[in-house]
Length: 232
Image (cartoon, rainbow, N blue to C red):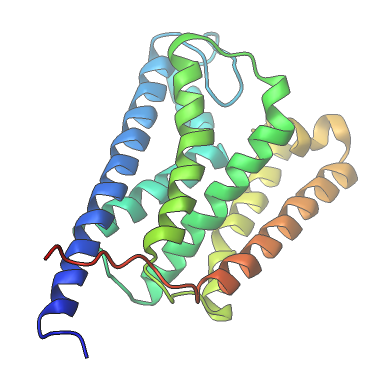
């Protein structure tokens, strides 16, 4: 049996590490989002597309920015990170869905950008840093933090099912809006250029990847988390 108070001390140590880890994540993601908004209103590049779109009104540019899955997924990551800074061992049905959404969405964001979009986007200056923060740092830091600290176990099939509600809603919105405006946030979803069948096939491929990742996260959800031992 561990001595009395040891569990409390270990929990406190773990809470400190969780707060520090997710505090860094929250600061970097928030700074990158703010920097991207500043670029948007000062004629700089969009870190998602590499374009400036100066000819568009500020309202249209802002609406397009928040239509990118990258931006939405990083907002979800930011919300989850702040939640863990405030209460490192939190739980609850809504929280579980938010946490799975943050893991799945940011993993998809990193993978799709790295293997599909990166060769199409030419960035420089601040936009390059923003892209690195949102497409590389955020996915790696989020997923490594989850493997290290959890909180786990939190993932069941019902949670995974609810976690897919927002991405599916985003897909529906993207295609409906694209049909009305001829603008799509990503080239592989552009039904106007590729045809609806090809765009839907590409989307289905991403959903299958997300389902596989969800099962991987569920399997890993039973792994132990780090519980730092108190110094003696």
